[in-house]
Length: 174
Image 1: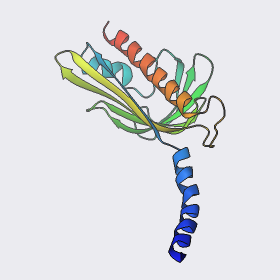
Image 2 (image 1 turned 120 degrees about the vertical axis):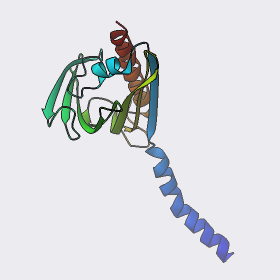
Image 3 (image 1 turned 135 degrees about the horizontal axis):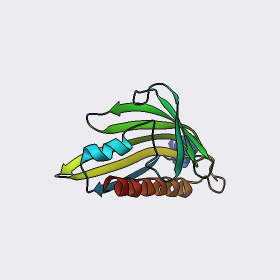
Image 4 (image 1 turned 90 degrees about the vertical axis):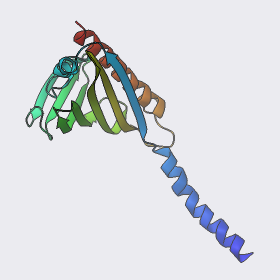
């Protein structure tokens, strides 16, 4: 009886920890596109941290700190709807066409966002671009506010990636 009581008490204390961990889930998005253009041409559009004009939602990119393609550089994206996104470059590998960054402040319904954009040659005149990220929804509460839930965060990032990759394809295949 004493063992059962002890197990129940331990279970009662462990339950809140398990349920809290499940609330604040890390979300992952990965989008890929094949582009009929050489990797260097695609990278010329997408591989400059100080210029995100290839994305149709971005009206302006401003480098606010640091050197364009050096880790630690910071940029502000002004979106066509007037919102802003502040990002920091965490890694830049020109030779392997890899750019990694984090969002530090944003109108997007997310937080703790880390992303990688990679451009890879996959054959003669063909390129695969992969854009992936890990993040958490903006509102960590058990019952998130409308528009700050997991589904909204996933759908928003997926839409951003798909529209950006489609436009990158169109620009690169000209």
